[in-house]
Image 1 (tube, one colour):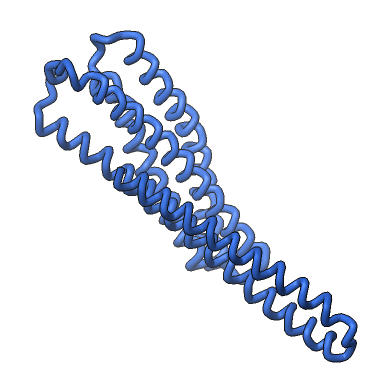
Image 2 (cartoon, helix red, strand yellow; image 1 turned 90 degrees about the vertical axis):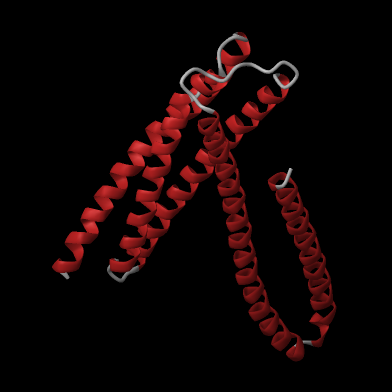
Length: 226
């Protein structure tokens, strides 16, 4: 047990350290995204790319930290000692990672949208490239922005798939409950009317959930290819 516990505790310590670092950087990352946007709005002569260099640098650092935390979580799951408490710990670390990824994606998407609006506003009167940045550099930054948007869409799709799996699990639970109710109804015929109303409501709820999932998927696809 000791040969397993030592690496496990070390990975937990690393995960907590990374989580603290990411939490601090995410706060600064969000504030930097807002301040850089305000600076560009107040100063028409400030080039967009230069004013956002610090934001892009912090974005890359955060992405690396998130990747490291994801790798550590996977290692923890591989060597985790058996037990309910251990499973709860792994689940909690993964939930924290998902929250951080969503916050990072929201801030990146917000800044990317702001940059696109400012580029459109400047479309009628082109400005010279920022000093020290070639056209290739600008294309590379634009490719990074598109890559960030694709990552955001992929993460939203993963969230939708997790929600679908959760709904599937609930469906299996409902099936087991229905089987039990059927057994009871066979013993007590007066419950048949109650079972009919329950089944009707379940079909209605399933239809509503299906419509909501379809609408969300359609909106995500429209956003991704807009």
